[in-house]
Length: 92
Image (cartoon, rainbow, N blue to C red; front, side, top):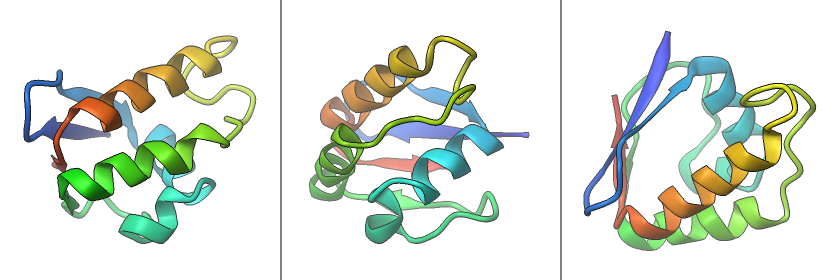
């Protein structure tokens, strides 16, 4: 299964595997902003909180194999760009 992150602004939509989403949220400061994620219940995030998600992700080190083996940094950069440009988002 996957989680779709639908931006409120002009950013591109992102689809992530559940495990990728849950790991990123629950092992970074994002958990403190949107709550721990265990299920794919919808999340509604405003623009200010999305920027805070980017800030929380800045110092996070993805675990080995997160996103794609050997491309953990690229996945993190993609998520940083999304959070910074999405103007808020919803998951589905």
